[in-house]
Length: 109
Image (cartoon, rainbow, N blue to C red; front, side, top):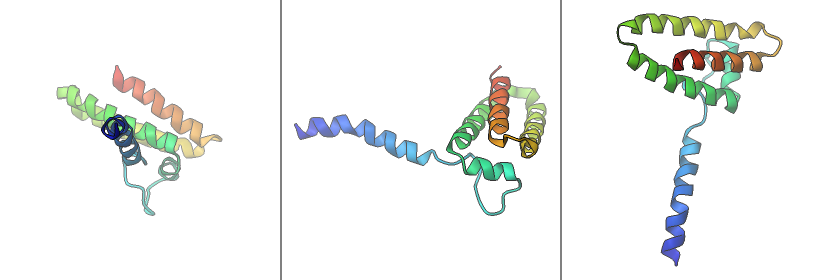
């Protein structure tokens, strides 16, 4: 009986460890962040989750890009600059969220 309970709880424990490991954005949060938007992302689990999704999606797109990889990298740098311009928005969190969602759609096409 105890073996059955342990076997049943193992996936839950693994999920909990995995969920705990997946906190924060894809970049390192430190006192030396380059923008207030990066600080905002570090302080928000929802934005951090979008950033992790972006890192994964961008990595997959880069692998598929082939000869277009250089152009994709330049576009991503431009997108980051645009995302960081959200410091000008009245609702910075919504601006950043929308920026991520739009770019994710672009990368998935």
